[in-house]
Length: 476
Image (cartoon, rainbow, N blue to C red; front, side, top):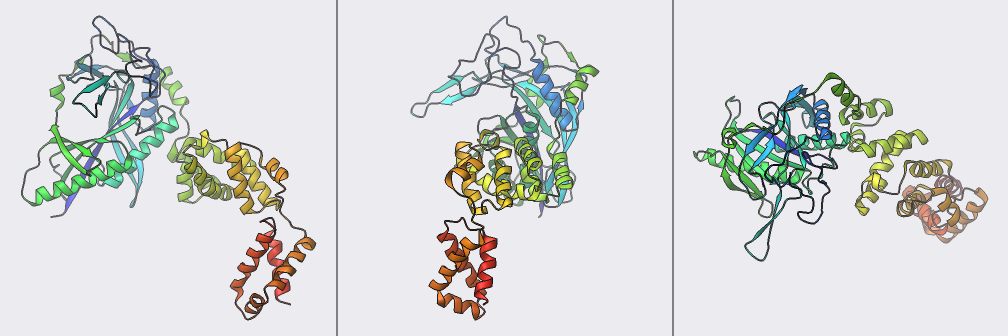
């Protein structure tokens, strides 16, 4: 039997505010355990939460960016469950009246563009973190993360493959980064994902038994966990066994999912409106000011880069993958008017250096004017492309001006015909056998001569002049 996967994702995004959602404690990552806490986020008796306005604005930005309808009146609710890292015994979240509903985004798939529906976006506070002792059967509780603001984005079950799920997750991360509301770092927990997956015979409308997957902290893990679960559920169904609705953990080391607990339903949490937080209303002026602050979003920027700069789809996708990368490209093109040339260098040599240093482009010492200067030097014939690459690496290291480096190290390209002619004559005289091969029709030997001349001139010979001189003398 041929089965079809039905996949929906619940994505938690940690918002990049300076303080927590209901108190003034810092949200900085990596502080000593329990150092960013206060009576409010520790759930002490008699304390009252106060809503962080910036959290609401960030949630509104995400709602607008994902085509959601923003509810002008929203309410916070208490979600009751008991866990060591939840000091109040409940989590402040949203249930019946979230901030936004009924949106969508589009993703690129192997079959073209596909729309994925978004059921709702709601705000909530994060829980703490358990730290397990590796040598003793003891767990410690770090409550620094308690009360850190989150938005949860719940998708419709519109994805049909692990690849589509990964594409959707990447698209959401691009959006939150463009908006500047989160760094989207999955390894640090800024972006977390739970997946719901069921199988049904292809062509059937009725949904199968849903299984929730947790503990996936990378795009690759999400995809691998879903692939494994499709195989597991298919085998059980083909064997005539019944699937159980449950929550399963992804075991990274073993590459399998393991049963964790039976799946909770909404009534298990005993939601009710939080009596300490009054309903909040969004007026027209507040909504308009937030809408006016939105940047150009990734999909719109990709389309503009294709039309305005003539970039191929692949180039546009890579260059717009982050807002700083796209801004770098546009500023560089404003200084050196060759969009495809700038794109090639950014996807090639610049990307290679970013990877080697393990930094994002905005963290590096390289500026758009540096790259534009290197490309101008190459176009002017002052330096060769090879020298340009070595200068780029030095600029990346030091942040110095490319022209200053060229001048200081005497790296100007030799284009003087008289000077190069002597080098060409010398190389030809030293390699008579290769000359005969060329004259016998083996023109590939030209590469040998060019290499020898470049070695002799330490890479400073102008390749165009060298080729012209070689052809003239070898064809005599």
